Image (cartoon, rainbow, N blue to C red; front, side, top):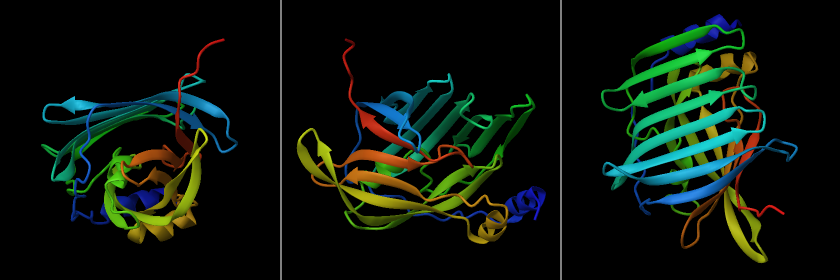
Length: 254
């Protein structure tokens, strides 16, 4: 089956538009954290920041990862948290040698529009823009936040927008998968492991035939008392390698 046929199926299949937003159990505020990105072999390939602050009655979060090879991953989300989490806008910029193509995408819930600019290694650029109906539980860039607000041990299914580069709304199933012991210095803590499964529905068969079925993603969160993100494992781009994001601490130069 050709990639052209897969694209046709992507364009013709109906979008899932129903969704139940996740209830706010812990409100978000001003936060700054330091991040490190590693490849499957455990080598550090990027470092950066998690930035979060109140903005216009909502919350703005931004993850910036600066790669050793000069590549950039820059993801910004603005959301509200009145009783339920609701994504208002989303922006993702990926560029450089670490990515198969340069990508600049944006989503706006109101008025329900998207814009995608993709540039291949051959220098050819493609721009897509139009309207897209977003379910109330679309949570691009918000999975760690949503995860912290789940009841410990519970499952949840939310929606994400996948860029192929045509934007498609898909389901993401979040299921608990046991606990792991971690160390904070010499203190032992327990992190809850969740498996994130993209649900392609009728797209699963042609995607599998093309070897393009997305892998599971994994996230670890401390769920006791004050929830906290610990680690993410999965690709940052469609068809990309498996990387992991972890928290890190500043070090002092010698």
